[in-house]
Image (cartoon, rainbow, N blue to C red; front, top):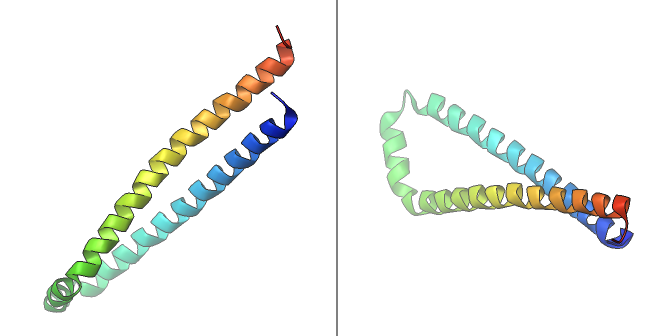
Length: 99
């Protein structure tokens, strides 16, 4: 395996790790916002009910977006595993030469 391809694999792995970190931060902040909303609406249950009904279509789209992000997150984890294996294979191939 030539160095150019190996470097591209490393770049792609770096990008996947960066993307995973960004999504981890996004999901953590989303959880904080959810907890803040729950705290705010504890004393306003009627308002929460009315807003949930009013924003039902938008909330359904947000759920679909969240499910898509989780799906992409799981795919990214598998891609990182595959890239790591490919990089290790290229190291082994380089170490033992062309046999």
